[in-house]
Length: 249
Image 1 (cartoon, one colour):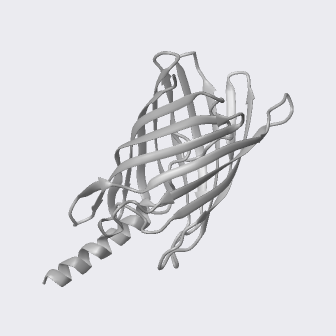
Image 2 (cartoon, rainbow, N blue to C red; image 1 turned 60 degrees about the vertical axis):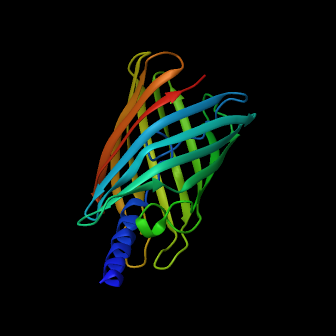
Image 3 (tube, rainbow, N blue to C red; image 1 turned 90 degrees about the vertical axis):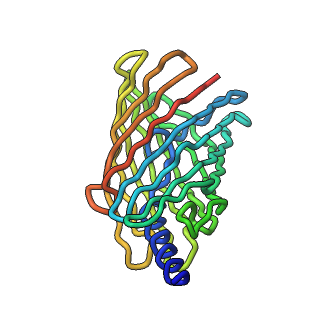
């Protein structure tokens, strides 16, 4: 009986991992990121939670901490440390430390009146979470994207595409593409929305196209509230959400 229950729990965890893994959050509060690094000598701190509901159950972070620093001109270093949760449909709730995310963003092209800025933001998700409980991927996963951005007046638009290296039994490498448009409505409020597409990340899986809408509220020049919500038009994700506080000293 214990062996049977263990097999059921492992299968439920694997199903939830497939549901939760794509896409990872890139540019808070959206999936799509931008090429603009933190300025040299400056920092960004986030305390946030993300949530995903799919046919396989619910999962997310509650909370996660994110730190970005301007390590050199045009270069940003990144760390995300999550407390993850996973609740497969009909299964037990698991909670604990998840996969640690490390990254480096480098802007290789600056924006001009006619030209967008461009950069890369390589990410590695280290398997520090318990994969058997649905709290991690079990393997190191790497994302290699290129991002573009252009601004005019109160409008900003950015996006790009990248490729995930996704090792593991039954997994396959997959691609992500997304684009976002946002507008500063005032010095206090920015709103925007994104469209994205991802290819299948498992053998026999299916890709998905979806959207998110959200924005940023500026309490002060250094303290901000970020939020978004969305879902797939097609694919497993029925609802996704992000809520976080950002501090930019």
